[in-house]
Image 1 (cartoon, rainbow, N blue to C red):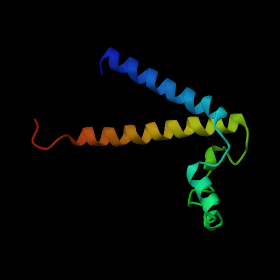
Image 2: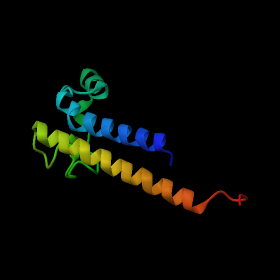
Image 3: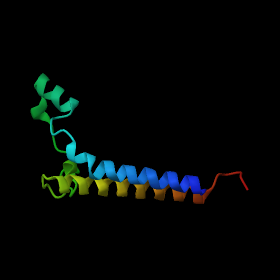
Length: 102
């Protein structure tokens, strides 16, 4: 990786962590567009929790606690897990190589 590429990577990860950890404090607690439309149309009561509803980071909260630290921590963990999974998949694909090349 070139120096420029490494710098871009570091800046990108830093921005993602700041957005997830700090800017998430100011996210709206109002329902999103789908929830709003379901409430307006009268079928919001039929909604069911997802399979991940009981997970430690459900609803962008750390163990269900509603505070800024909890939301920021959940965001940072989400970014790190996503980067880890994406990096792992990228590493596996690059390791396999492209058939027919050298």
